[in-house]
Length: 427
Image (cartoon, rainbow, N blue to C red; front, side, top):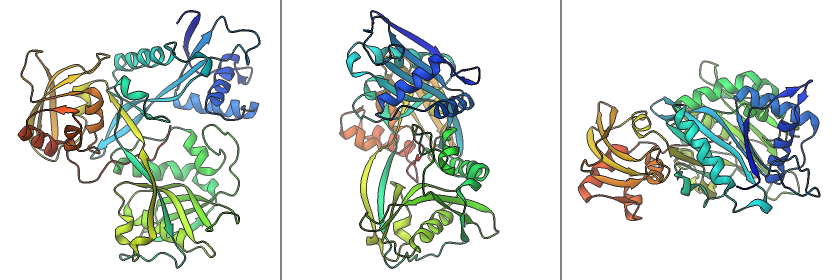
């Protein structure tokens, strides 16, 4: 990285404004994601959000960039990180190192910028005692080389509601229209209940609070989202246990539709009740939004064919940094033992490990290097298997896991889950 300088820092204010380094980093990030330049008010709001999250910002600067370049003070590479919890199943919350805002300017590709940013950052995360790293990838071919594996997926669905929504098992409780601003304090409390109940869930970064109320359109557009509406689900006792925010797509959009921006529910009754509410809007022909791969909604519809999956893609990518700590953090439905030999080109997860599961939990220890292993795999495959969202059999058939058929069957039983993991948090 000749003539390139890497700096790691936290967002800072000077005289009530983001300092020059913070502002330049944010503008470079928006440039990398093809967003408009951020106005001064947006820079100030984002700096506050980054401070609340405790984000670390990394910038790579070209000391010999020509003077004609777009603002020579902008970094040519950006990278951000923060720590939030990951639900590993059974309500177990594991501190996870989240990676975000990764950009490299087109003029500076193939100079090792991303490799240096990510390898140094992962080493620091491991040194700080974090067992796992996570990201949501805009491209599917980049992060496998650094040990990340696809761990959860998400669907985009369209539900025909021309005749409303009929449920075979009517949802308990009721739904009320609400001002999105009312979710400023209530929204995080409801999400906390969903987060605690959902394997694969990542705790919301701070910007979700403003995103939910409509004050910010999204993380890159720190400006109000016009036309946002909200509704709150009340449980049988009147307690709020779910909410939805949504927009009307406009009369020029055919068929006439509502688009879900955020749907958060502590239980299935709240989720189904909110969908039923959306389907009761006059003049609306369909509702679109994100949904879990393992969604119960189509199974309670009187017309299951009204539910159409329009897209499906990977969402959460995980990267194990500490094998014993990570594997011991998740529940196990069956008892058993397993010896894993893990390969890791970066060295963080390399080794031979003995796993012993009993009574729902496991102990994991590093064994001598020459110990016989039942299973051999790389850290990318193990990270995909970690939450149980990717079957052992699939990766074995793909040549990603080596082991005898009986051992593979035992591993599949150990890592199996009743409900596929789901993450609706983007970062």
